[in-house]
Image (tube, rainbow, N blue to C red; front, side, top):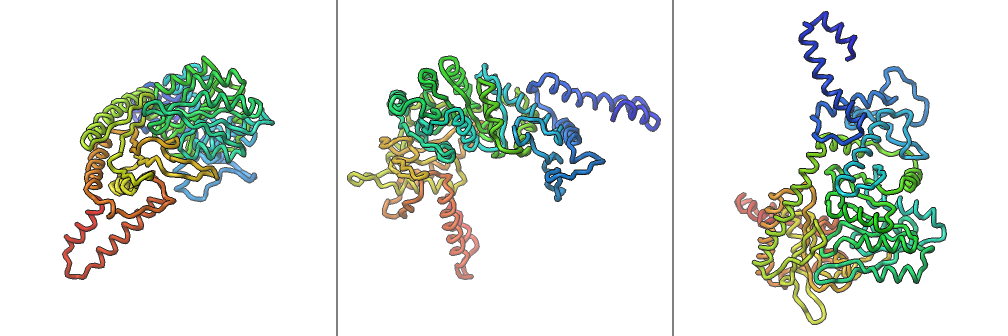
Length: 526
């Protein structure tokens, strides 16, 4: 409604009512005006109606929503399903152009405006979380691993004779597979153990730089956020080496943006040495569905090269998720989530410490990991000569999943895993021969104290049951199966076993009571 339409409306409705409505509408429109003028993340979150009004106005700026329009190209934003169109607020053209994902899309003026605003707000979040000198960032609708691969391929272009990536080992598959998928050769640098904690082997990295030669190295890839007992890599020392030997430095900051401590370490590394790019996940840091990442850095020329290397247009859906979330939260809402995370992290440490004391275990002494905590599980691992029987450890992982606890990891320290043809001894522990098995749990953004209490309650019951169960009564898990509670294969095995158990209960002869059938199924979860 413009001023002329409101004036006409006064012929139908008392002007006092119209004026009141005008003021209310202008108030919402001023939110959008301020956002576009300042290109700044609002301090206070918007209400849903204001967000939807702005999204509707943006959508009407895209050519597929023009009232009179004839599209005769191969991609005209046509969507046959009305449900799909509504799910995307009728913004169907995507973002970017074939030559540059950061370019304005002529057929998608509203979508292009949205991604510009998103990138501005994300850059502000990176700065107030601790990387104050970051010069730019852009969001891509691909997850962290693929985003790292895009960065690797771009760095490789400026170093045509290079093929190696020095990688400080972190037992997470996607950040290793991205090196292989980029057609590069990883040089794996195992961390060194200092007490319980695993630190970056800076000396080994420098030795490889001297042995291989800096011209043959695409980059050093470090990691910030990781599972205990591994600590964040020594970013300052790696950055100093990168500057000394003129080698790019790529940081996998998957869920480090939520930690001011980690973000300040990136800032310090950039001041004392070389940091080219750091990449973080949108879902892990901003509580949106999986499918996006933020590529940031200190040199706009480097970032521009990466945007130009993205092939074709990109999906607008993950961008819209972030746009809505940022406007809903505001900086105050996000800072409150950050503050809550720190409080819950301490609560997790306290409660897990009680479980450790109860069963003769202990928390691993990890000072340089602000998110993940680990507790030993020595009493569930039985030594048979030179080998350890890990049946109870594997059972613990399965039982926790069956009790609706996800995300915790049970690590035997003796598992061997093949990833893209590379053998990793001690998979999950980030190194060979970590001295004890353990379970990890993380206090990441969005977690609540009730989540911790539920986890600890179930862990207490499961450990108690396993300690009473003779190891001879526990089935041997498949040798190809990992101890990760989120393992897809284990989930499938557990689900199959559960269905078989339920079918067996249901086949009890008709004389059995329904109560006994229910109890039998419930026992599987207890």
